Amino acid sequence: MNNSNKDGTIAGEKDMKERFQFGANWANFLRTLNDRKIERATKSLQSMLGMETLAGQRFLDIGSGSGLFSLAARILGARVHSFDYDRQSVLCTAEMKRRYYPADEGWVIEEGSVLDREYLSRLGTFDIVYSWGVLHHTGNMRQALEHAAEVVGTKGLLFLAIYNNQGWPSRFWTWIKRTYNRFPAGFRWIILIPCFLRLRGPMILKGILRGHPLRFWKNYSAERGMSPWHDVVDWVGGWPFEVAKPEEIFEFYFNRGFHLIKLKTCAGGKGCNEFVFRRSDHPNHS
Image 1 (tube, rainbow, N blue to C red):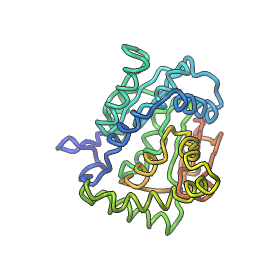
Image 2 (image 1 turned 60 degrees about the vertical axis):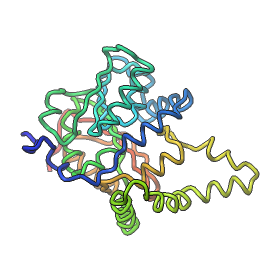
Image 3 (image 1 turned 120 degrees about the vertical axis):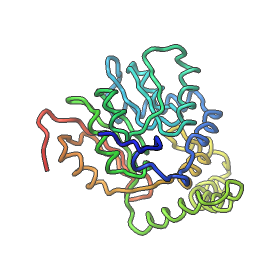
């Protein structure tokens, strides 16, 4: 099955003129990258996968973004294949490789789409398929979830993070994101600044009242490696945007022969629920 349109775009990703340019945000993030953020990313990957080393594992990073978690997987010994739909994100991942693993044959980086089944079929299957906060930004989350499952090898792991469905708050943020991306770039601060104050203001104020105004910024609990500012830009701008309840993701993959081995929810909030599934020997069929 070929999901490409005649103009070279991918089915489900056509007419996305308002799509948020994640790569531009990641390029800014790379300027703040340090050893501490790399260590956090590496430890979070070990924790969620329940593995101290990934030596001998084939690791697919769907929507690699900055390349931080591709780097973490490579540090842990995996052979890594990274791809992203956003060209600037691909360049960010390539820059990450250039800094830490130049000319390394164990890390391949490409431009590609998870909605392009023909592209994915050429990659084969992987021991670990990783896609954190990506599939809900494709414009066709269900198809992206399906395609991600198809590249997981027998007894392989699938590590996903999908935005939580909060009901009306999710609909409100859908409106915010669409509006933000429709604004001319020079005027997006009109939306971004109030959102930053709403999302990060209370924590910053708490630090000020306790006499440590910069502590929140320095100690921001970003296991994803994001600074508070880049995290808000990524959240507000992230369009297309879809959400799902944890039970919907569980049922989707259970019916496709996966069982859940780890779950980390956002406690009903606006963030991502994280799932680690393992492909079973004997799939279930709905």
